[in-house]
Image 1: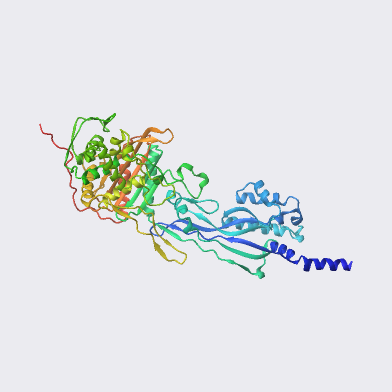
Image 2 (image 1 turned 135 degrees about the vertical axis):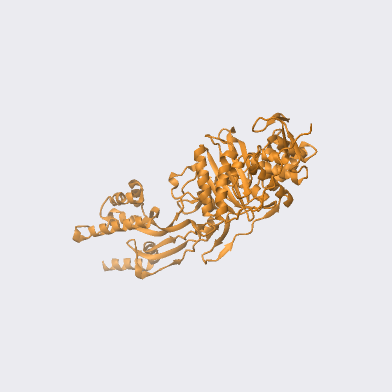
Length: 589
């Protein structure tokens, strides 16, 4: 007998010592990932739009729920029944995880609040007391194998506000939309690791631990102003609901820096509760929708005509009730006798026919005119991403001039036959307001690293589109749209400020039917017209109740949002009178 013991001892301590030591280490040491704290996303004034709070991943050691360890055959089912109401899980799902064979670790629920973990600890303490032999127990705590790992949970303090911009994070804590996805690498930081000695599922305090600490993510400061974002979101949500429209968007931009001050979508979603969100509303439609802009696009046609020296604001344009071009008969929004308009009047009254006649002068032939117009549309940013590098952003649709159909040659000048995003449309008006220089839109002001150092974002690219003289003339012409009694945008007028703007009412392509159905109503402009600082663009898709005209629907939204932005940014009222360019002319007998 002694010889057998000696042989076995030699086998354990000498021959198979490394194997047994490795097996012991497997169960003695526990290694966990230390989640890095995700960086905050703030507005331009440092107000948190997305933040991380303390949370816990609820875990378990399945070995402690086996019949041998728990002393009862149905320990997983009993524990699951207790935990399910606290974790919001199905008991069967939890029981299955607790029965994981040959495992010392299983994840039961992610990102639980400290309150939930405290409830579990209280429950575990109660069952620990019941397990005491003095209380008639078997000495085994039914919930002794329920553990936790410190983590963080993403929260959005303002609910739906700016959700389309911010995006959200998925169950694994990774950015899955918007800025959260676009800048996930900077926000996420670097996870750490910790390895410690355990016994019975608990850390041995005297054994110490080792590992690498987590590195927090960087904070992202956006160009968004939370208050202006709120005003834009309230205004567009109210009108979309009132008009029973599919959706709508408002973009507010600093005309000089290109910074986006607001980008609101309706309907929206609450990133705190993705289970209740409508999948169709979870993107950023202001950047991801491509649609035909309608008459707000005419400002680019006028820019080309003025810049090429083919006309001036006073140039006479005789506008018939119908105009035959190619294979179509074109008309304006309303039937009318022959109009005798200046070029300024063509823009003020938003005449499709007048715009076709004016852009037809850009070349000796229609094909040449198409090429010239196309070159200006490209310079204004049509058919290209805005430069925001936002996930899922559409570049819009602009065919090459040689590919324009017979009808497109005449519809593109007044905004049908090409597609844009709301951000692209806003950028066009910011370019005119900025003296003809296009500044790429920006959404990020800079980042603040774990060391607290702020790094400004790179300066956006700039390019001249039209001369300063042309831009100033266009601004005066756009004032006629709002200021003149003949104009289509007088509902956008703001007392005390000179306002430049343009209405748009476009036939809308239904994405499901693949044909025209309904309308896109829009309004774009900037203020003060004599010292431009802010651009506001609004569009509403498929309004089905009440008016569908851009001036009627979006003009008041423009006014409401622009007034709020001017006051918020302390922009002084205008001190001069508008030029009031002539709209009509008297024909000679």
